[in-house]
Amino acid sequence: MVDPAGDIAVLAVPYAGATAVVREYGDALQGKVIIDITNPVSPDFQGFVTPDGSSGAQEMAKAAPADAHVVQAFNTLFSHVLAAGPAEGRLLDAFIAGDDTQAKTRVSAFIESLGLRPMDTGKLAMARTPENVAL
Image (cartoon, rainbow, N blue to C red; front, side, top):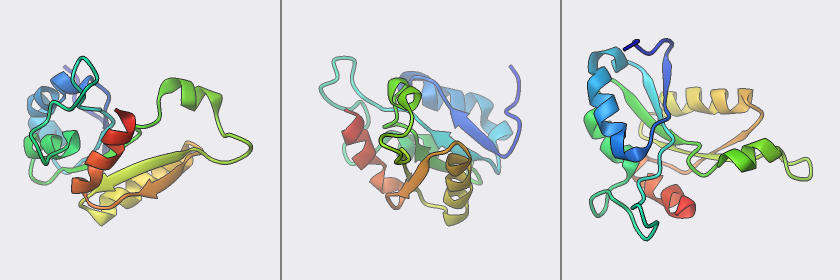
């Protein structure tokens, strides 16, 4: 297993194994911004597999080292949407949610570098809203 390089780690795994991956990497994620792109939906797409009142990103934050910062992003941008690119010259919106302002600023800069427009939805507790959009 290779330790994540850089200051931002994109968690690009199915939600079912995401918290296990965060726990497995543990110390290697200290001080990093972890971008959670998962959607914690049930296999039949009829609901969520997270505890009531929580989101996938909040569950990731519980599993992450205390000094890591989880930011939810990209979970509403599916590959076919990204492949299609801007619609009528308008940038695609990438919703983000997180508790750390500095981490969200870094993720926003990353999103802009990809030619997308970051849209801050608020604290990590708001991550459930984009998850509902994805469902």
